[in-house]
Amino acid sequence: MATSLRIEALGRYVPDRVVTAAEMDQLLGVSSGWVEKRTGVSQRHWVADETPVFMAAAAARDALKRSGLEACDIDLIIYAAASPQQFIPDTASLVQRELGLGNSGTKAFSIHSTCLGFLTALDVAATYIEAGKHQRILITGAEIASVGLDMNSPESAALFGDMGTAAVVSAARGTGSVLGSLVFETYGDGADLCRISGGGPHWLQDPPERGHEDSVFRMDGPAVFRLAIKYFPSLLDRALQIAGVEQSDIDILVPHQASLHGLRAIPRKWGFPDDRVMVNIGRFGNCISCSLPSALFDALEQGRIKRGDTVMLAGSGAGVSLAAAVLTW
Image (cartoon, rainbow, N blue to C red; front, top):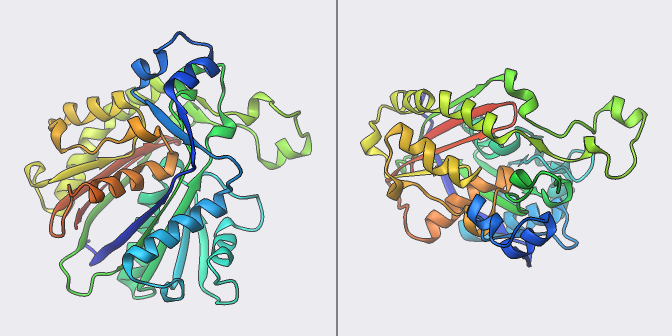
């Protein structure tokens, strides 16, 4: 069912530290030029001393400023990222406090669906808005991937960057902005393809030494790609069908920036032209849940999206999960 929902504005925080492909070549011990040639990522940003809360709040302030709203106007905060500040309390409460709302009572909670955090939060926001429970929702998150990279696996380690992003979402109130569909599927048979095995209660009972293999990110990229390309075309078709639009009606496809290979191969398999796909992985790398809203941010900044356009958002995440949404912007 379509929901009258409007993304009022987006915000972004990017750490100052730039790590070039040439620097990554040295860190990974690969030949000169290997990283950029293999991944298409010419640079990425890594944190210096920033925390997830700091970056998420900075991005939130940016989004609020662009929307013309104040933090006190928000009635729900969703922290949608894979990088928590700590186990307890929930990171959303820490972001709420950082925004000066610590005594406000504003509802705040987190969602964790790895790279699909933004789309999952958008789905939850639409449900609340449709039910009349909330009118102005802040979706924010931050990812610090740089601390968990396995430098012995150059194929995955070369991809990732750090970032914070945010979006202000509201009830559309007759503006014509609509979330026409959001399709989400999980294939748990692929759960081991992207993982950080440590961090649970059993792991904490016997804490490993720093640098333990359970503390770093492991990914079987080719296997994830095979699974994604198997299911994505039909999922994208269903998202169109539910929204009641044709593929030719899509003005721009904004995907999660997982890998340059996937950003090209999956739209082509679906029959979608390259010139209507938003790609910014070369500047930022894969920033997990922040990649899709960051690409959407750049599409808006570049004038590639205007009000009334039909926009498709799509992505994959660990689980393995796939999702796509169709919006009338």
